Length: 554
Image (cartoon, rainbow, N blue to C red; front, side):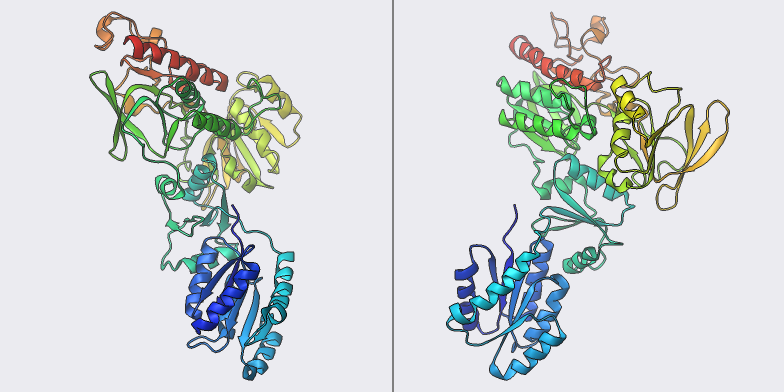
């Protein structure tokens, strides 16, 4: 939503101020917001709030003879906040010489003599011309969340990624290059601001906030409405979203919880071209957005930036505990937490995480790679999709590959597109042994696995796709897992009755059920699952039928 631009009137005489406000409201109130102030100091505070809320000032009208700060002083200081706004001075006849001098020497646009009756002759024609002139060059300001930070900040990368994946529009202002960034910091009156600053559309300023703090202040849902649900789904990737849609559409009171953002790994994909029903392909973000809208239509409740830490049972009920100390009851649980990208374990990698080294597609950084040399480590589909997207911005994209070709792990349609893209080069038999950089990534030390020779290559960005891990340590005492941490279900569970928990009685676990009755696992987190978006959606869909069986028969 774009707010109407502001017309601000300032006069210490309340009677004159009310009349001026009345006249402006009657003539311009349908297109502009009319604000008033009785002093220059108060007017400056209003201007600061307008700037923090990313609103526009079209016109300021100030009386010259005000105590502590004259109208001319106020109008001159107002140009710091809104240099394009039109400035009008209200004067008595004896002040006309100073007003004329101000027109020639400062940024005063016009002066008006008091009284201005009738306004149809002496006020509106003047203001109409000034406002029309302002509107001719007016461009609505960005209405959304603004981030102020230097580019090379690990927190900045985290915040940008969180906002983008939660479909919250944002604008990043570089403190080192954007003059508006310093203006906003000054308007916030912070003595020693901790960057990044996050400024919400209502003017609220957050200093280096956590994702949970942003979620709470930005209006994302972080607390459940009720204490009991039929189904709680942990993880909002394709599997979790599919389970939510099918569960809610079939009458289950469903809650979906994710510690980061809907979409999971697939949500960061720049283009998925082999998903059924999208002949031109679809971005992961768009697929997630559509799924969220569909789930909400069926009444699914979402919790964002909440992390589930434990699950236990109380009779036939499940208790789901979260990191903030809260807990919820439910009949059944679906574990759909997916997998996380493995991190690079070479010297320098930890220090440069988010400062040139990114895991996954990290599409929030794509535009920042314009004209740069970018490297991609990995040879599966995610790496290929990222390479094609980054090639639209980067000067050169190089895929580093341990093997001799892409054909072992990448779909042929991606290989064909990569071969046709001049900006993408393939460097086989390569391994990164060290990354270097002071403030940000500067170079990679690459080893040739055939010759054992190493070479330092300049690099401004490295996107890492070296496999994934389920990150299920928190489930150690909850459900059975294999040595890699993937959750065991159905036929994959040990066949010994002593290895199956009490509660199954005279039945075997259902296909996607864990060794804890009523707790299911689906998608990439499940042992022996097929790591594809379509199969993840499929498992999320079919798990609901087993939940119904459990609810009906136990």
